[in-house]
Image 1 (tube, rainbow, N blue to C red):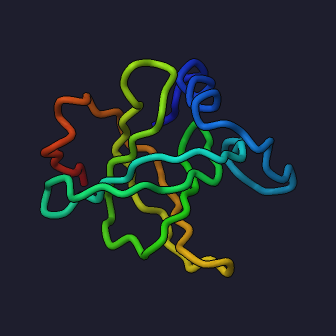
Image 2: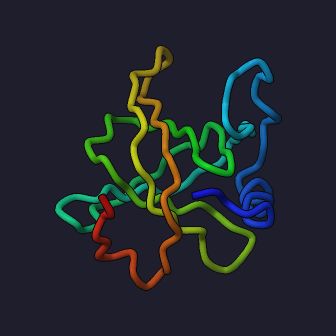
Image 3: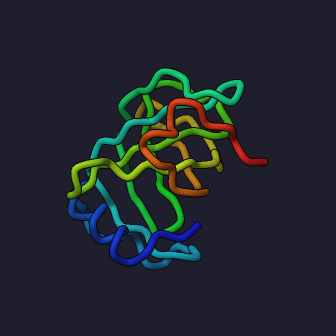
Length: 128
């Protein structure tokens, strides 16, 4: 899934930006550095598990890089990103990688799969 330009711009305003990432990186979509906080809810047995705050390192129209304090044990998760609107932007994500950070914590690559309605995020059946 790819975020629309309007939603992507809204998220950048809400998360704050640290400027664009290195231009020599080979990526499908450019990433913008961020200094924001989001909520991550792992999906376990088809249900949303307890959430935790995560740092958003950078974001693109197709995914995000997150910094977590402990290893993520789920293949899919819900990411709630702050928005300029009343409700956060809620997206079902797929885990691309989870690597130990040399500075501490874990770096998670999130691929955006689909938007979720706020009312349906308590019981989310992951799509395979």
